[in-house]
Image (cartoon, rainbow, N blue to C red; front, side, top):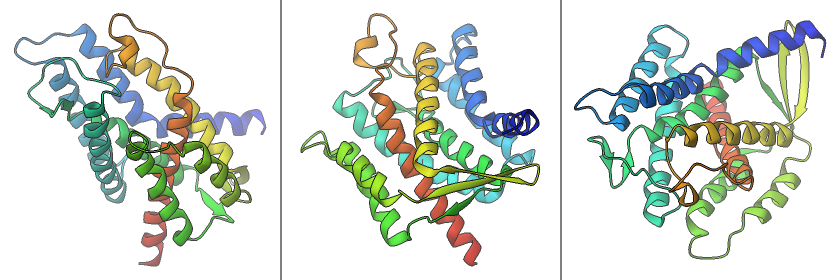
Length: 252
């Protein structure tokens, strides 16, 4: 990839990250600005809602993309409610918009991943090569999502799922265009790269107190690198959902 194409890629990637970056800015502001009578988590929720409205009404986000993001809000909140109940992480501060220990802004964290995928898909004209049929990808994505719940009670099969992933997506590639020049990348590699960058973002988010892991109760520490695996798998769930919705849309 030449320097010109690299700069174009960086430009489109940056535009695709507007929603996630906006959330980080909101988190940072919530540490610097204190509004009497407005808990910090509620401040973050208000900021996320304004950001979402800005994305839609400025046409940076389409109506279909907004629908996808709403789906991820539901998926994310369900996972948050369970994980917080199991003590995987916590939101220690008080808030009006807190439901069973989970502040409603947490759904935007998952929505930001969906936003990035949707934006990058549109801006870089993504297409899939040798992508498995939906009767494989949809049950596989469901198994990954369910394992986030079931591993608390039975054997954790995440590494078995990764082995199966490499088998199912062995030939799959994602193609994208930069200035009318096509490039491709193994789909599994793109999952891993995205998961790694989300892990970096997670470290920033926990530093700003978006949530707290048990080992961060007394002082902030880097999130353990094994979390990259969890994000890697969650990216797959996100991608499968977006890809299936894109497939349904093209058939209409």
